[in-house]
Image (tube, rainbow, N blue to C red; front, side, top):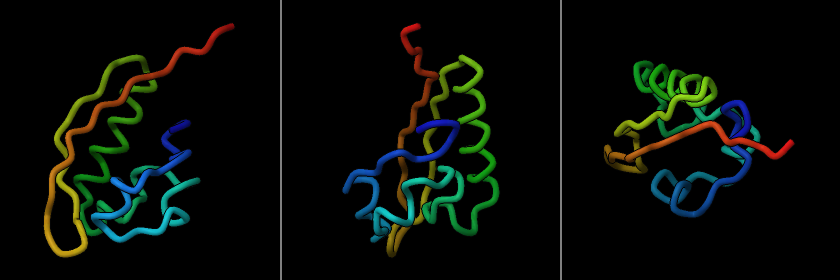
Length: 84
């Protein structure tokens, strides 16, 4: 993820919501269909990305909408350091 934009998505992330890869990759994580109709979850994800970008580790259990039910994802994000 770069600046909150998904660079890749694996089957485990896509299958529960029956999402094609093209619906996720290249888009901000908080715009994903996992959070559709859940403004508070969108705010949590967006805030978590900002928190990680500022250097703080973000950890949270996130509820998301799977194809036919509500599920929970244990999420963690942190800023990556690159070699100079």
